Image 1: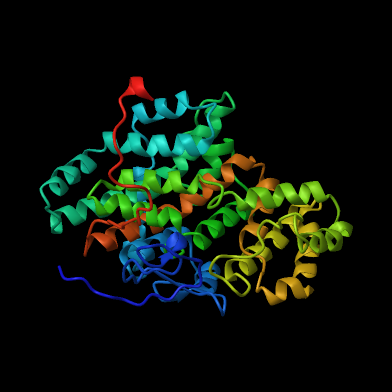
Image 2: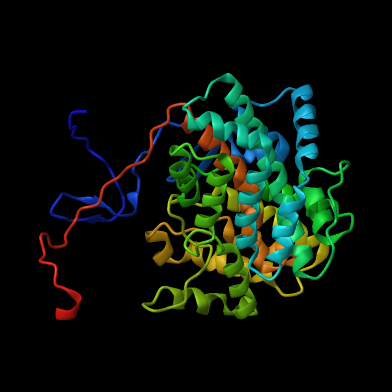
Amino acid sequence: MSEQTVQVKTTGKILQSPCGPIIHGLEDVLIKNTSISDIDGEKGILWYRGYRIEELARLSTYEEVSYLILYGRLPTKRELEDYINRMKKYRELHPATVEVIRNLAKAHPMFALEAAVAAEGAYDEDNQKLIEALSVGRYKAEEKELAYRIAEKLVAKMPTIVAYHYRFSRGLEVVRPRDDLGHAANFLYMMFGREPDPLASRGIDLYLILHADHEVPASTFAAHVVASTLSDLYSSVAAAIAALKGPLHGGANEMAVRNYLEIGTPAKAKEIVEAATKPGGPKLMGVGHRVYKAYDPRAKIFKEFSRDYVAKFGDPQNLFAIASAIEQEVLSHPYFQQRKLYPNVDFWSGIAFYYMGIPYEYFTPIFAMSRVVGWVAHVLEYWENNRIFRPRACYIGPHDLQYIPLEQR
């Protein structure tokens, strides 16, 4: 293939090298065409398959939204019923996967999630069939049907993995899935072993809707890279989980709640926000976003839910009150206005989780429960026009050094 010159726009950092400019972190570099999600960071708009997130959050459920993201359109009533029934059938794990989770009971749940997803892939007969087909370059109608079935299984199984790890980590036996509960309510039931409050179930469902996809952050890119080798969907999702495990990607809502608890009172908000504007000052977790230069639309939605939740169950640690006071100071401070730094969804989402009794370490696994549908949808989309990723690096080391025998060094 002949060499081509292209122009790339970026808002990121450019590193100079002997080979030419390097876009540090590939910021703003396009990797494909997509019809899954779109973000207008300047206006604070998020679309899934053309639908505004506000409308989906108000009117839909995670089951319906996950169908939309996977299949590219809203389902009919019959299609949604069939999809939900399949998802319920797929919730159970292979017994060997359950033992993997049990053996990792004392590990961080993200390690267990990563390992359990990989293990489940090893025992899924559909996955083995797809692997065999991909190994000879075959990806036609039959293989696509397999791939979509595997995608549905991954969406269905993630809550079971997370809930089982929670149970094992507390020395408890697992609570098996219930077919009469929806995706979010069943997760809380498996986790805590009791019928969840409807508002708590709605909160989990809403959170899952809001995080189902967000273009191509690090975890989604990791899934693309692995899938581009024609590795399987389970391995691609395990890679995405591994990327999400890193503190620069996941965990901001956990740190935001920890900050609120440390601050302790809304009266300190002005002092904390002012200190955050100084060199070496504290970082306000959940403020600012790589893409949004306006108020994150997901944050507005989950703020309203958090307000409803504490109105019903109380705010004994003043988490919502502290967050509200910090937000007020941030939105009125010139430092944040000039830099277009606004609260994002992580600023609010951990508050309800904390009051539901969900431990900090499970905040990011719940994010993965949501984003898994985005990960698999992007992989399936990329496989329609697959090319293995193969970037380059500019070598700046020496050449042709003389080897010195060990005894002479």
